[in-house]
Image (cartoon, rainbow, N blue to C red; front, side, top):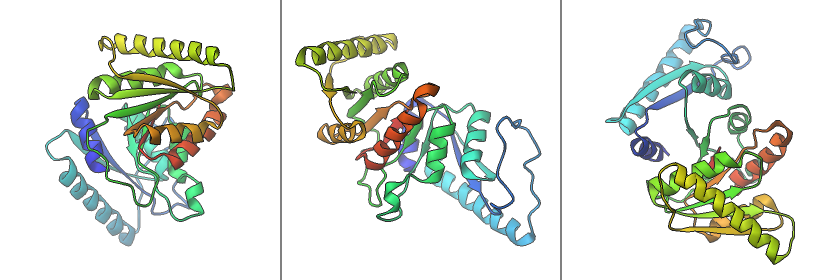
Length: 275
C-alpha cells in the first residue's frame, strides 16, 4: 500500500511519517502512555546486545523501505518501542497527524471474522481519520490515485458533518462521482424521498463550503435492513474505489458505530476511510 500512501501525500502536499513499532519485549514494554511529552526520554530502553542488534536491523529495513517508496517527497522515519497501537496514538499526537493509513490483514478463515487487534485499538482510541486497506489475503490491485467512485455512508452515527466534509473533499479533489447512502427503518416512498433530498442538500452545502461550486455526479440511496451488509453491497454495486464512513465519536453511540465499522472494514471490497 506504500504507492497509495505516496499518491495521497503528493495529492495533498503532505509530509509522510513512516512509522514502525518495535515490540521486542511485550511482557515488559507497553509503549508511551497517553499524554507522554513528545520530547520525553522515558522511552529510552536499554536492550541486551542481541536485542539491540535486532532493533538496529529493523531500523535499517525501515530506512531502506522509506527511501525506496518515498524518495522525492517530504518524509521522515520513526522507530519507537512498545505496543503498536500505543505507539501509533502517541506519534499521531506528537506529529499532529491528519490521517493514519494502515493495512488490515486476514490470517485464515476464522480470523477473517476479526479485525487485527492493532487496527481495532487504533479505530477505538484515536480520533483522527483512519484509512484502511482491503481486508483480504489477495487484494486486487488498487487504481493509484483514481478515486473515481466514492461511496459515503451517512446517518449511521451522529458525526455526519465529518463524513459529508470528507466526501465533498474527495469529490472535489479527485473529480469523483459520489453515492450517498443512508440506512433507515422500513418506511414509505415519500419518507425516503424526503430523507434523500435532505441528505443531498447537506452534501451540497459541504461541497460549496470547500469552494467546489455544484458537484456534478451525486446520487442518494436510502437502504433498509442490515447496516454493514447494505453498505458493502452498495459499494460493490457502485464499483467504489473508496468507502467513507463515520466512527461515531459521540459517546452514547460510540460502541454501536464501531461494531458496524468493524464489519464494514472486514467485508469491504475497497479501502475504507473512517472519520
